[in-house]
Image (cartoon, rainbow, N blue to C red; front, top):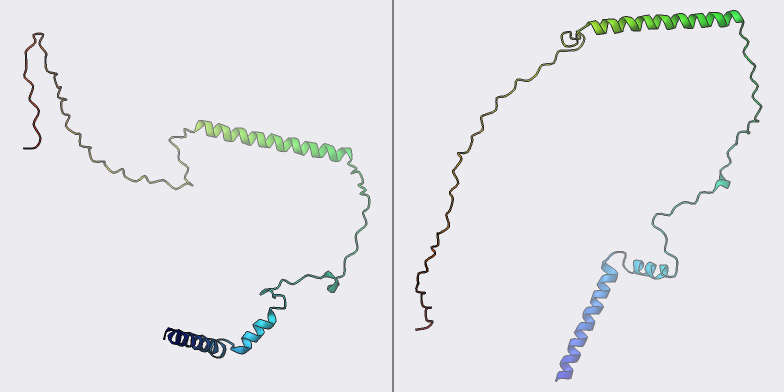
Length: 170
């Protein structure tokens, strides 16, 4: 009887597996066509999902500009007349003297002015925020430390009785 029961279970299991495979082939995805494509693609190399194109310069023909020829630089010396040089030097000295005069006047005016009293009218005046009064901190009441005194020992020896240890049990 066991052999008949075992064979019945095996046949039911085989039928279930066959039914599952048929369901997979016909009712899911691309069906048998997808399975055939998968089997065919096993022999071929796998294609990349996002292939990177290879750049080939031979396909692009761009006109290139001609290389310029390098020529030796020739600089002609500047010829100044003596009068032009004298005029230029005189102008520089005059502008230098004017700058020194202005600098001296500014320094004199700056030194004569007390910096704490004079304010610059071009700058806006700063308003300081009113200082908030801080509440007075409560001082904790100081407690006097209590000194513990050690018991005094007398030089005379007194006999003291020690307590007897308690008995365990009843």
